[in-house]
View: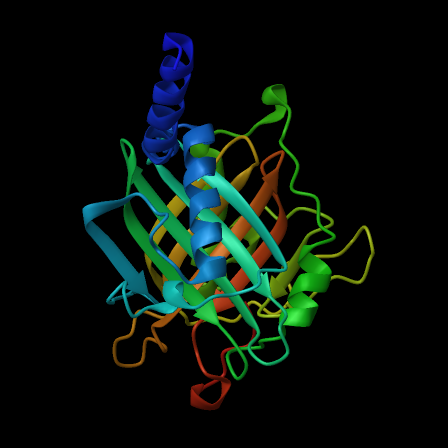
Length: 282
């Protein structure tokens, strides 16, 4: 056999062996690296198979704000995801992905947070909702969410990280004392909550409707993407103490344009049948 042929076969074999390692090495704390991590996650979730994920040895896994066994968790459930969108926080090396499954037998809307350290995924957190949970309607969520525009914001018009976090905090703070005048309301602004929708197709559509009082939205953690003008918040709807509300696992996702709220998405891991009290909507 000619030396050139042997060399070709050797290089081809090496390329095949190195392909998984090179693929995993693309995971990093950049937009492209975080996108690659999300792509690997979505593939793993669709198959219910973790073998293609570059998980760190001490990977942390949570479901609905509680530590869980990744080998027995929601992530091992094979799902046909009908719609998803992702956001990337390069400052904290995190991503946030909103996914919708409209399968009639087992519909879901869920949020996933990944955290990356160098070339490994070190945190996986999922908050899921399904039939029977607060205002859940996967078909409606898909209908409204899939028609929204979350395009990149031109560099000269992007809000700062601080502005995005302040907008989210102002909205969430309003639930305690209902100081809605401090929230940077945009018009139009529409909210999708579990599947319930506030929009009517009018330029005056507002996300202000249905904000209750007396609820302490606590335990807030932020994933911020200035390029897409978004801030996602993992939190609890209520602090969980006596008289302080349910403390239900919750995510709020905001799109902010020119410092004003444009879209609000809400998921709450709370069974409709277990709700007690006058909560209103979010």
